[in-house]
Image 1 (cartoon, rainbow, N blue to C red):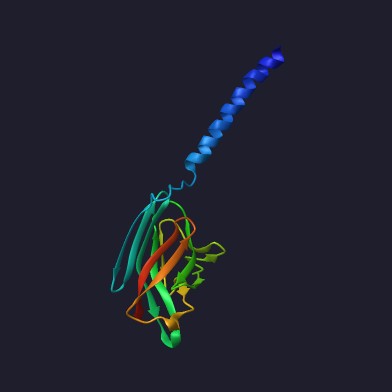
Image 2 (cartoon, helix red, strand yellow):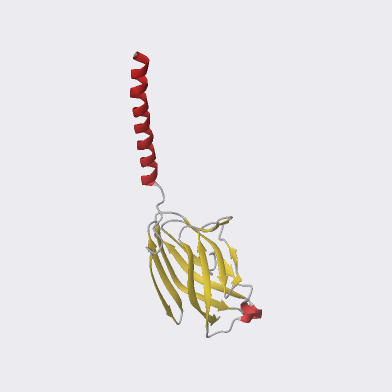
Length: 170
């Protein structure tokens, strides 16, 4: 009889401990927002497109996104990405006008890994800056200054973003 009373006490105590442990794990982790709950705003000016995306665990600001044409058909996407969210973000894939671009990291500030270019919480990655990461385009010769092109940005946490950016001659 004594053995049964210990089991009767131990089982509820074990269940309570497991419930408390699970609730503690879920409250401090990354929380995803329901589809359609994110808020965003976008504007395009002569010097580039600005985009702001905010949802749970995501607070990204993209500024002055523009394709800059270079000599001999080369081109790169220049933009600044500010991660004001609580978690580290990665820019994993970029496509410009349906052609995948090549990402290069900046080893000291925004290294490239298998997840993409690292953008730490509370930091800004200036793609195209002298010592910053780069987004090099493979289809630069086909682009013409003065127009706009669709750009797809795939982030690890924020997900897929699509914007239209101006094409500028450098």
